[in-house]
Image 1 (cartoon, rainbow, N blue to C red):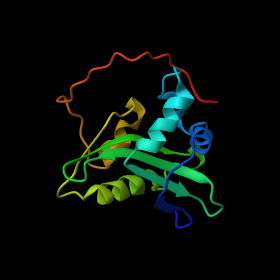
Image 2: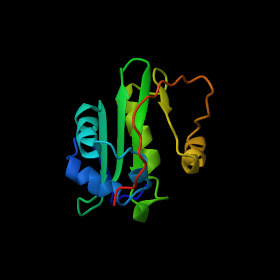
Image 3: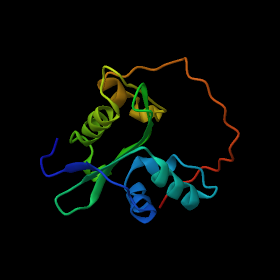
Length: 146
């Protein structure tokens, strides 16, 4: 990973995260309904909140996740600024989150991957699962954060 990038646990403000979404492919994964309100709740309630920053302190990567610190970690958001992709930031965010949650020997990692991101996750050693159940009745108007 680029040595000028630092990763640490940090609570992000909704404003900074929304600005970050504009510079990533994550900006099209949310529904339009009550977007700002819901992003604020996401940032407040994630049990793992990691920020990757460049030497100027600019947010260039984020991982948000939910964990019980005993068995599982569900990654809700993993994104890297388009200008910083392919520098190992996403991989390092995943390794760091897994370690914080309890490590490979105790913690299984789950997430919903965008089809274009599947090769990235497969390179991390993850595999597709057909065993996940879903209950989804939410309103969902697609849009891209701009």
